[in-house]
Amino acid sequence: MRAATPDREEPAVTDAAPTDDVRWLAADQQEHWRAFRDGTALLLDVLARELDCGSGLSLGEYEVLVRLSEAPGRALRMSELADDLAHSRSRLTHTVARMERAGLVRREPVPGDARGVACVLTDHGWRVLVAAAPGHVESVRRHLVDVLDDAQLAALGAAMQVVVDHLRTPACERARDQGDVSDVTAASA
Image (cartoon, rainbow, N blue to C red; front, top):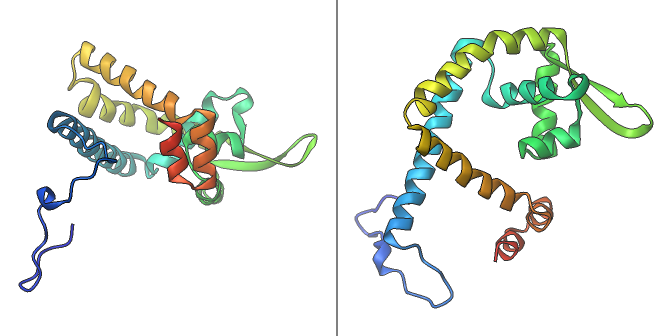
């Protein structure tokens, strides 16, 4: 929200004209939404800073290395990797180009597919991942896993899996690919 100026006062949220077509959040829903939003932002920020300090990797680069390390042959098609990470193709291309210059990954043609490109984890990338993982896991433990009890962690995981499943439905993915937010909203109705 913009700061108020002497000649212009910002309207309070309660000044908004009520409309029948908006399903406003109840007070408890608003509280939960903000706790999720703020907690996620703060958690990802501290994890990213600690990972960068400990390994020089960004959180996005680390996730690319993890996904490749878990894939057969330590390789994934670029399109599959982008979908798996919920990144745009162009964002992933930039990340992979940076990682390729650092010798962490390499791109190779997919055999039998003239247009297909695979991202492959290099031996150097594997060593960097192995070196970075203990510190990152410790950060995840310190800032999330050990802060919650087992029931809270299970509830968080279960709730977020429902959200992931919803956002990965064909209708939501099509709308996201086309950049039409209204279709994502309609797909969730």
